[in-house]
Figure 1 (spheres, rainbow, N blue to C red):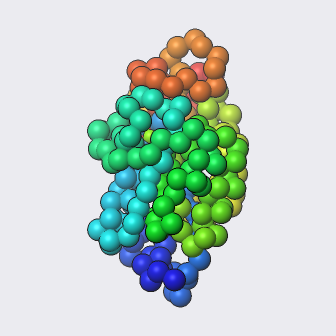
Figure 2: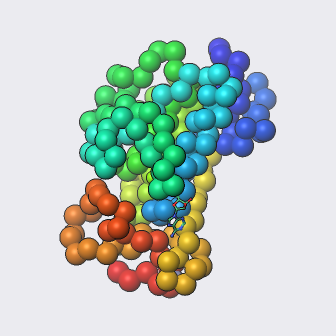
Length: 197
Ligand code: ADP
Ligand code: MG
Ligand code: ZN
């Protein structure tokens, strides 16, 4: 299969000798921890390596229009919006070598099997998503993906209260919906000590 797929690891300098099967990489952490930035960085490197890359985001995430993923420092790359995990599988071009998915926790539970199917087809799958909700409870989709992934990166943000490393997303509004899509002003990064449930 495609020679370029031997470059598997998040660090492009690290190669898996002789590997032809695909892999799953998970980039997780709180809001503002640089998940999207890191996803974009890895996907851009694939582009430099002339690999065919496709990026998906959930159609639920309408924050910035549906045809880009964008980080808080405003770097962005084009993406396809998908309503369901099945749609991701259907929309992937047969020639695509690297599949990126941002905000993976927005998808239905089928996304775990879809990522496995894409990796089993020999593709490099890179997903980014929240590991915990605003209560500090795990997002099961991200947890499951971490369990089956070859590579897991856990990012930390900076606690806006004390400046320590932060792994929690503090919700600043009073809604109880688990997912509140919207302005980043509704959340801030907090460390374990400064996080108020
Ligand atoms: P995520 O996708 O994890 O929400 P992004 O990749 O979109 O994060 O954005 C990360 C960027 O957010 C950082 O590089 C920094 O410029 C900015 N930022 C704003 N607030 C914080 C914070 N409290 N801690 C860390 N980075 C922050
Ligand atoms: Mg993000
Ligand atoms: Zn703190």
